Amino acid sequence: MLAEATSYDLLLKGGRVIDPRNGVDAIYDVAIRDGRIAAVGPALDARLASSVRDVTAMVVTPGLIDLHTHIYHAATHYGVEPDPVARRSAVTTMVDAGSAGAGNFAGLRKFVAEASRSRVLAYLNISYPGIFAFDQDFMFGEASVAGLLSVDRCVAVAEANSDMVVGVKVRLGGGTSGEIGLLALERAVAAAERLGLPVMTHIGKPPPSYAEILERLRPGDVLTHCFRPSPNAPVDDRGAILPAVEQARARGVLFDIGHGMGAFGFESAEAALGAGFAPDIISSDLHMLCVNGPAFDLLHTMSKLMTCGVGLADAVAMTTDVPARAMRRPDLGHLTPGAVADISLIDVVAAHFPFVDVAGRRRDSAYLLRPRGLLIGGEFVEPGPRAWETPFYAEGVQP
Image 1 (cartoon, rainbow, N blue to C red):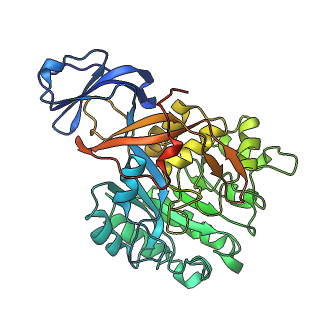
Image 2: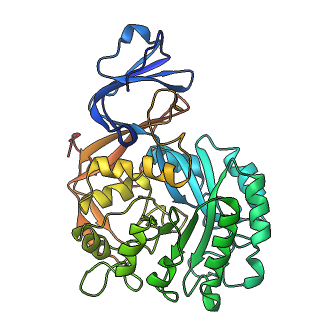
Image 3: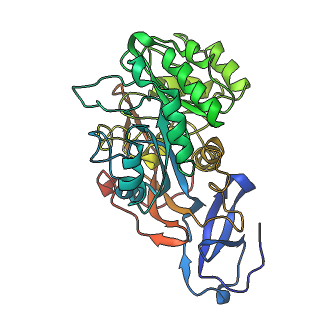
């Protein structure tokens, strides 16, 4: 990966660089010039750098991508402001997953994306108003009204915002698509076909079933909430992977965590991982009802998956290279010389932390990921405070 350079604006010195796209997991330096990666390799010459930052003992990764968030804050009850959460989770790209539909996407763009320091991309909801009624005690499924599911409007707005829209979102389940069932998915796929983009589909409580949803998804489409607890779990009562799940993966469907307030269960995750079925993508499904638990943010969700047995390098791939490819944004998610200098700095620290899933089941961690900062387009951003107390943290360790 090493590239020639005559001068650097910044040199990150001595970190453990994990770059899955390029097959790198080593103690390397990373040089930045003009907001882009200039060089990556061992012992780069610090004399060429205007500024040097010692990142010894830190993990240096491509900028983390949270593929499933809800950040249409102030315009929707459940939306959270992106930048504070990005700082506390070392995330450089936050992807809003269907908060806005064709009818209100302009507001997400103007008041959130254009005002945010972190990069904001979005899946456009097939339902015209987006997710408009989502509260602790008041929820109405935006995909339950056929008249709101306009393929033409979705396509027109996505085409007009092609720099920001990365796919079409649809939420399916008894409380979200109601009696309409799979019609909403069929219209989301129809819109996505016309756009040449993937679909991200939420899976909730049945109907429809896990299998009914999967059989309609195409290669490259994303099933989010893949490790949700029963009902509609990816495993049967014996803990075996559903045949439909294996068949979908074989034809290229992607499986995303999408933790949220009701969609990640330790029993489902442990059974699936024990059977050799890991997720493709880790995301938080961050929103107002889970930002202070049980999801918290992307680093917390990554830490949970690592507690279940996912390795650090795999967790990094699931939050960098794979989501970038899923969005068809090959410019993101890697540290190739010439790429935009989006970089996350992380510690792996010893921590006896009580992880809790959406069903209240607990697992105790041996370590936890902690933010040490991020770079967006080569500019350093200080990490934000975490959502829990720091006494859980001890000295940094490498798992």
